[in-house]
Figure 1: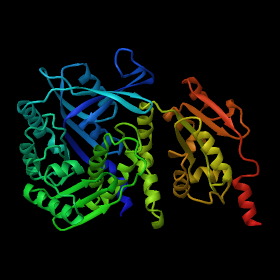
Figure 2 (figure 1 turned 180 degrees about the horizontal axis):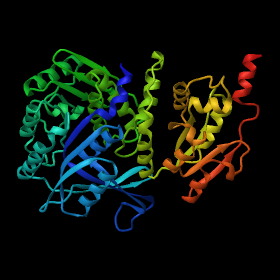
Figure 3 (figure 1 turned 180 degrees about the vertical axis):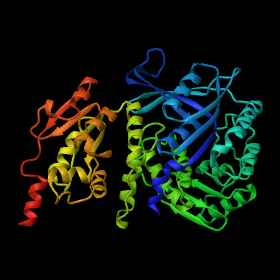
Figure 4 (figure 1 turned 120 degrees about the vertical axis):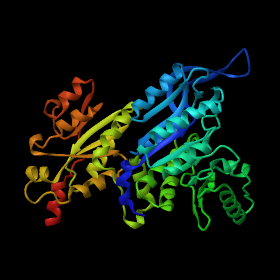
Length: 479
């Protein structure tokens, strides 16, 4: 697997077309049964609105740094306005087409104690006439993308999908389809199709033996004129099947919290990895890892490059390979975390030789919030601060080691001469909720503290572990 291609994620240009939805979540505690009917009473304390359906696929692509556009149908209603605002905040180029006679598809889930109590759906099926509106818009924007991903939830937005695929293929673009119809000939011409096991059976696939599964899958894609099938198989993982090859990938997550939206994550990750230049087998391998991360979370979840980096580190540890998110992309990921309501903690240092004191300190810093950003002095900065024999380890290696720690979410270098070797400018860019510094400092002495406090944040000073320091480690080695 060429992990260097993971630095090309932002080069993936993908257009998602399909059934967009607004997912609404009402959270609360339930401790009583209603006297009116044998149902729990949920005292609602929190509301959440999220992009669902094809919009969730687009969100997954955006979170993986892919360049993504979205075509779909919404009603002229409040739900449509909310969905468009969500997509805008996610930096998704959404071109949703409003129709006056039908509502935006919305699903409301009541959640109590991490379990769904009930789901309420507000929807009407869009007609072929509505779908034709999307086809017209597709032809206008197609030239801006290399991949087109059709997300079919059988809500009518893709009623003319055969015509859509024809238009896309004539433009020499790659087509991926997450299908809903049992008639796979509707997707003729697709390069990849990603049915789940139940959809595969409904389409005529056989699962009584591995050989029959393979043979029936090949027959289905041959009959439908589809190049490859990525079959998602729940606890059995997934299989990539073509006319001549079959690759199986075991499931990566044994403790499943919620499978909602896992299929969205799979096809989104597959598209981004293909767009980054990976071959199909490697792209599916990473999509399988992403699925394992997604199902460990509650609700329709997304996966970040940092999470994939950690998963890949575990998965490929015997090869010695490692992927680290490009520094330039980290600020965007921090912004996404803030939009999700996560508390950002910032600390900084040289971390030249990582020791037990550093590990404990970073774990304590992470415990102050949800995400930890480490500002890392670059090599020139350390030389100015510590002398010509430092650093011992160069920036890329120090960043790699820090990124492998469970407590660290992001690493960003700093230290140009005009910054006076302090992270003050970086802190202003990030505007963390909590600024943490280790050592015998007062708050007034900490770079960036004034900015954090002025913007309503907190500044904390933590003690280092006695007897642990990089200088002592170096002295001991020399002795």
